[in-house]
Image (cartoon, rainbow, N blue to C red; front, top):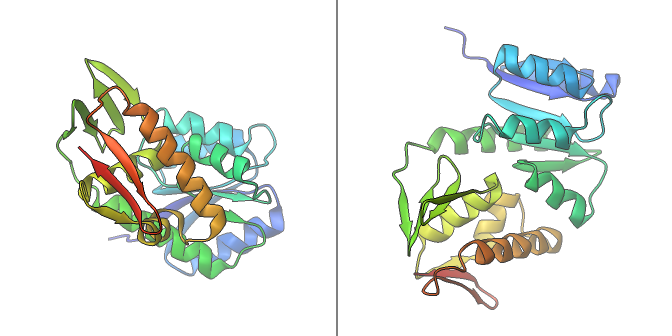
Length: 226
């Protein structure tokens, strides 16, 4: 039985793409390397990889656009962006288009491999979660939707992950450092600012039920009260 895991690698720098491909292939991955977004989408449809590693700046179709298109038909496939950009707005744009993680160039292969395994393990653990009641809202973790009064809103992957973890600890404090390391990879200031933005977005999406609050417990983390 073939136990290799398929990875779609979209990287327009041939030398870097070849290095990453060869390194991953020594770790039991089957790597499909392409150099533009249009070819990446074609290979995605043909090969149905388990995870995507996408350069942001690519010819014909950039990584953000490609991820957005794929997210419209697949809400769970892990997506890692490779980018030379590291400004908060750039990273948030990546997450808003369905990215799960990002690596700033230059990066180490070991770090990329750790992040790939982390995302694959997270997907493996996702079961058919029943619809979750949060106040008057119905949260479908697997489909990444939040429904109220028969109106369904689609959450980004990061929003769904954050809300699910808040719900698991509802009415208790969700440790800030723990969730930053779990979802963002580390708890540095840059990622902490990113998480604060996502908390604000969730508050807005839950505001129609006055009995729901996401409270900031200064110095410790957040608490979902419902």
